[in-house]
Image (spheres, rainbow, N blue to C red):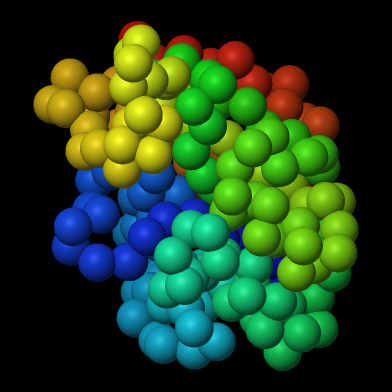
Amino acid sequence: MYVILGIGNPGKQYENTKHNIGFISLDYLAASCGIQINKIKHKALIGEGRLAGEKVILVKPQTYVNLSGESLRMIMDFYKLTPEELIVIYDDVSLEQGRVRIRAKGSDGGHNGIKSIIYHLQSDDFCRIKIGVGTPPPHYDLADWVLSKFSNEEIKVVSQVVDKVPDMVAEIMKNGPQSAMNRFNGMVSK
């Protein structure tokens, strides 16, 4: 069993913002697998189903980005899962829009949602799919940048990456993070 968690903020005002690329990706993954993310459990919206022959739990924490680990800790404890059975999808401002970087483990890289997850799991040994949202323009506040909505042009770029998320997740589950890194890292939208 795998937990696949998309990082984002709940609420209409945060829909289609850069910080919510994890939620956006999870919604696309759910639709591609016929899974509905509609149960409220453990401070999260959850959907259960199958992907790549395995049971999966799709998770959208409702605790806001900076507290993503609170909800996840409850889920991991309830299902008795290890960090190795977790895949997290989130935004990365150090990657240009349309780039992907998959990692098997690592630091929080300055992302508060990942910082919360590492703190609550007491481990950084979980797979992550980082989707580039680009760096803010000069004199642009980082918080304002990640909370800004995607422009129509940006939507075209990131949607090409989101379209590949089901393949990325399936590759990680079937063949491991290294195989997924070899196949998808550095991918650029055309």
